Length: 215
Length: 308
View 1 (tube, helix red, strand yellow):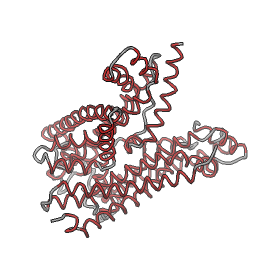
View 2 (cartoon, chains in turn yellow, red):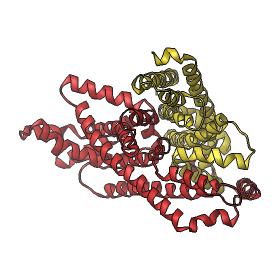
View 3 (cartoon, helix red, strand yellow):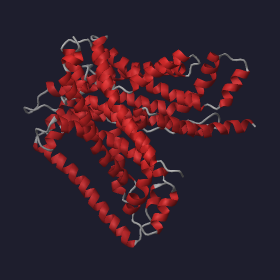
View 4 (cartoon, chains in turn red, blue):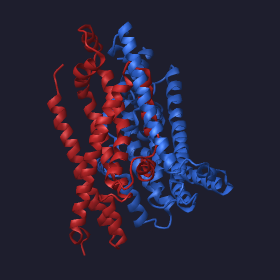
């Protein structure tokens, strides 16, 4: 009785579920993270405070609690009947956005001072400076932490399985409830996660090599 | 580069424009908050009775017990992860190849598997009736691996002269590690170690999934067992429990910042590294650890110079 061969279709669905929730929440987290990082360095104090509050609050909240919030509170505010996948992606994306924001902000700090000064002396506005000069150069230093943040996101996506999203942890739970031995289940699930995390770090290694510039 | 480098000191026009943006931004944020509150109010989640449940002694007692249970699991996991971290770090720095490989394999394996998968496997496989120990064991394994990497970076950042001097005095390998390298590594990495402990504290909430009655599980039980106005008080419970979590995590992070500041004040030895962001530590990426090493290398040189 082989747990993988007997339940391969569920395993495949779980794997696809993990990959897709990772992809969707990565997109949410990247957009939000970069926008909030922009707010945190902006010349407008209320927006800066908002950015700081966002990061502090989300970074100090356990992800499981955020999942509870999106499961029970968000449908009440927006509209009832949102799918678990969407709610899970929101929770993961928002949580991860605070980490991405901090990575981007420290990336902005590593861009040499002269670059921003030169942009300003050319008469560029704040948003032009950030968009055209600083952020593109910050990308290079942001990539390594970003890769580890996204790997952490992949690992965190397991929690979504406990909130009825179809993914690999859900498969592990289902199989162990069906009475299969936990050790082979654990091995297969770990292998599947290793595949995802290794491909993420592989992609980032390629990106880093392509962005590499002799200074 | 400080934020102010990104924009000029505003002139009269820019001052007005910034004010307009500030007002618009504030209004937008307040608007979002208002919509949230109105929608929640419409659904009856803000009714006084919903929040009155926290005045009952029973529920207060439940929450106090839950905080205690969370702290208990956190305490065990913190000690366990630190002990495992030291052991794994020493094993990974060992001169014996098999030990080194074993430690490296263990660290790399458990660091790249979701914590929840480990906790669940430990719970189902070994400790079905002891969810607290399952939670603590899972947390210890995962965070132990991360702490091991942090400590290893710390040991590597101790200036080479320290080790050489210790060997020159005739100390054994164990003595060099326990009395010279480890203390300096711990001191240097304390902020990072504590920010990983904050992560551990947050991760105790995974006990929710293996039915350990910690804060979150209690919150769910309170919310699903109490009925007010024909509704379950999920919103009020989540807000209260969330506040407790944020307060606990902020207190621990505050401790990390305080220790870092205190360490910077001291003039002796190598200074502690700036606490790495939670994210980097969460990811447990070598890149972050390497950055710390470089930072510390600079601090170490200062000590050597003083000797001259």
